[in-house]
Image (tube, rainbow, N blue to C red; front, side, top):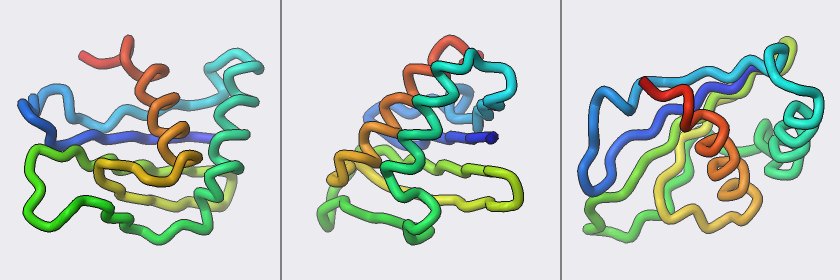
Length: 105
């Protein structure tokens, strides 16, 4: 499985830090792979619409998360904005941020 996350926007966006980061699960320890697979499954990621907007009209300084998951022949991209109201999606995004933090340039 490969998961790409891109984060844009926020109070003080930094373009250099918003580049997409790809996680290839073949390079991770098995426990982390199981966690990611479980989070993707629990979030029903492949059943989600391509865009989920929960931002109030007129809101500013919100973040947009674009996540692409490739699992074998299945590929799906979801873009969502803060605040993330679905707990399973919020947990997936939070976990991806923790994993990718040390990979940022």
